[in-house]
Image (cartoon, rainbow over the protein chains, first blue to last red):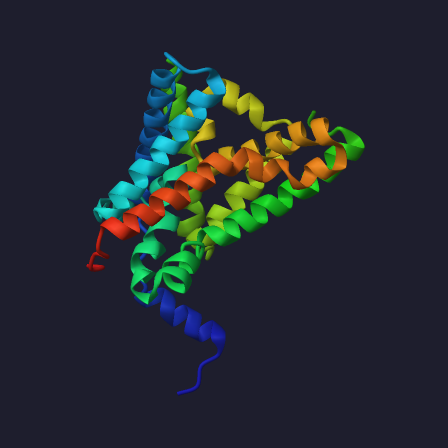
Length: 147
Length: 118
């Protein structure tokens, strides 16, 4: 049978289960918010014996560590199933995007498996983040924007 | 009270991400990338710092905060080294997060076995 893309789309819409935004959005809000609260707790803890910038950096590093650990234990993906973007958007999601392919592709070797696949998901994030920062740096040099 | 703002702002960033997942065809990789780029732009415009002052980790833990950090780093590097600083600041500011993610990702991959996707 022949279908136009529009007809095909209409058929798909009938079979795909509707997105349960009533559940997914509050779940993302709750879990993501709690991860940030954990980050604030760690920052406040480290502030007891470190200056602001180091404390904030160490808190991020701790979150990255915890996320790598829980990804390795297979628990972070379970949380992600419930929380969706709540586990993606915080820096723990970035850490998970590094650990997860590293784990999966280590069987293909340490250089082109683990070493290369480490950046499958995080590579674009780093690339476009850095490119944008370079562009901003040039603009800042000439205009002082945001200084 | 500070912790309430942290929760509110951090949660809101994640809820926006979930809206993008539910109502657009953006993949998680694209959302992560967009967040960092948006963070650099908002940080560059000098807007994001207000959110950091208001919500602390609620603004720094989401990936937009990582972008803001890069913008800050670039500003400092340009102040210190001139135009060449534009090539230096982003990585300098992001270095701890990146190195930690690579180190712990690698260690986790060595220690643990891949789990079944069930």
